Amino acid sequence: MPKGYIVGRIDVLDAERYAAYVPLATAAIAAFGGKVLSRGGRFEALEGEARSRNVVIEFPDFDAACAYFHSPGYVKARAARAGAAHVEVVAVEGV
Image (tube, rainbow, N blue to C red; front, side, top):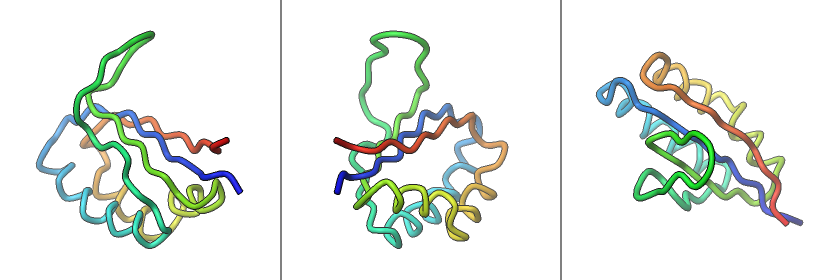
């Protein structure tokens, strides 16, 4: 079965409020068997518009990635982050 991935593109507007989100999100990721492959760090915009923070999280499968995003734990994390960042998130099935 192919892995599932969450890809997030983020511009943090309020670092203090965003910092409150991180431990909540980390706990939700672990609860669904997720592994963070990239969280921030060096990047280069190769085509199109980029955001300043890029996150890639691997899950056992696509359904686990989606379940994580919609879980009560991650809903709580997103509420803590509300207004602290511009965020785009997609779930992607691996090959």
